[in-house]
Length: 128
Image (cartoon, rainbow, N blue to C red; front, side):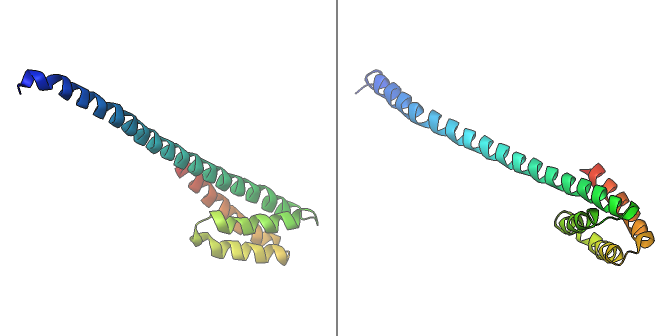
């Protein structure tokens, strides 16, 4: 058998292999891209939750320190508790102290801790 006789069979085999492999590689690339997009979406949503937790903390705790009412104190407490989820563990002692100050109506001391935490939040958000 000569090479000229095998050429059509080689071309058919090559075409058949490509018709199987090209869609397979396309699907693999597409799946990788979809996973990457999903991961980025989840990271974005997690960042948005963190920003919302920080905003709620500043709003509710700030309001309760400036003018404590029976309506805003529970919101302040819940926003402080939510901060444990999103804030670095180095902040936890300050959050503990802030919670105690608010619970015992020591608003002057609470304001000082709040200022410190506000600055930390600002730094945290500016680097992300």
